[in-house]
Image (tube, rainbow, N blue to C red):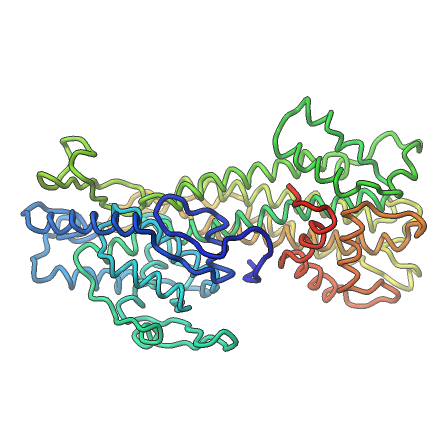
Length: 539
C-alpha cells in the first residue's frame, strides 16, 4: 500500500471525540500527518470512565482485566500490590509480533483508531494515556510494530502490544526530528523523550485497554477503503480510454440501462465513462459502424466496476462504525445504562463481552479482496484486447509494436497483469479461519488482520493492473487518427501518462513504464489532472 500523500478533500486537522472519525480522517492523519486534537467532550468521557474504574478498585468485586489474570488465567485473582505489575507484564508478554514491520501509515492509522476508541469513554484509561497517544501522533513518534501475530480476537493483541510498549518506555520507535530528516530509530524511552514525554506507569486496566481491540484491522481497513475507491475510479478511467482507442461504444454506459437495474455502483461507473468520454471525436467517428456490440470487458464495465464499488461501500460502512466503537473488554458503564446482572458496584457496571472480535471486518475485507481481484481481471482482459492481434482492432499493430515480430512491444505487460490477477485471486479466498488459543478459552477467532493484509495485496495488484491498462491504452492512442480528439477526461489521462512515459518507438523494458504509471495512479496525481478538466470529482 502506498504511503504517498494523496490530493482531495482530506481534513487539515482531525477531531478525536470517539464518535465521528471517518475514513478520510484516518487517511489524513496516517498519510498527511494531519494533527489530532481530543475534544472537550472526549476528555470528559475519558475522565468519567476512569472514575468508574477507580470506584471499582474500592470494591472486592473480581473484575476481568482489573484484578484478574487474562485469557485462560481469568480465574487467578491478583493482589492489590501486584496490579501495576499485572498491566506491564500483559503488555510485555503480548508483544509477540513477527514478520515485516508495519508501514508508517499503517502504524499511524492504528494509533489514530486506538486513540478514538479510548476517547469514547468505556475503557477506563487515565487522561494522560490519551494525551501520550495524541502527542506521539502529532510529534511523529511511531512505534516499530511487526505486522503478523494478530488473530483478530481478542482483537489485534500483538500489534497493539508493540505500540503500547513504547508508551511505557520500552520497545522501539521511529522518530522524525525534523521535517526534512529521515526517521531515527530509538529505544522507547528515548523516543518519548524526543517528544517531551515520560514513560507511563500503567494503572489498573490500562494495559488491557491499550491492546484489546480491532485497531490494526480497522486502521489498515480505513486505508484500504480509500485506496480501493481510487482504484475503482481509475479503472473507470482506464476502461473509458480503452473503449475509446479500440473504437468501442459507450452506449453500454447509457443511463437508461442503469435505470432499469438501479444498483448505485453500476450507475456511478456508467456516469463516469460518459463524463470521461464527453466530446470525444473518436467515439463519434464510428457511431454508425456495423459493430453490434462490444466484448464483455468493455460492454459490462459498469456492471463489474459497479460491483467492486459495492464491496468498497460495504467495507466503508463497517470501518466507520468500528472506528467509533468501544472494542475492548471489559467495558465500564454507569450502572443505570445496563441491566441488573452486570458485575460492579452500586454506581458502576462492568460487562465482559466480545466487541474485540473482528468477524464484522474480516468478512467484508475478504469480500473486498475478491471484488478487487475481479476488477483486476476485467482490466487485464481489456489489456489483452489492446495487445492481442487475434482480437484487437485492425488499426492497432500486434502488441502495439510498429515492427511486430522484430519487436515485441508491450507483449509482456499483459503477462505482468495476468500474474497480478492470479495472485489477487489466490488472496481473494476467505482468510477467515479459526485456531483456538489461550488454553481453549479463546476458542473462536476471526483472523481479521490476515484478511486486511490479503485485501491490501488485492487492492495493490488491482491498482497496478489498472496502471498497465492505462499505459497500453495510451500507447494505442498513438495509432488513432490524430485529427480526432479524445474525450475531456480521457484526453487529460493520455496527456498525464505521456508526461512520465514516452511513446514506444523501440523495444525497451516495460517495467519502468509500468512503475511510473502506477505511481501516477497511486499518488492521486492522475486523478487530480482528470478532476481539473472535468471541473468536479469522479464518483
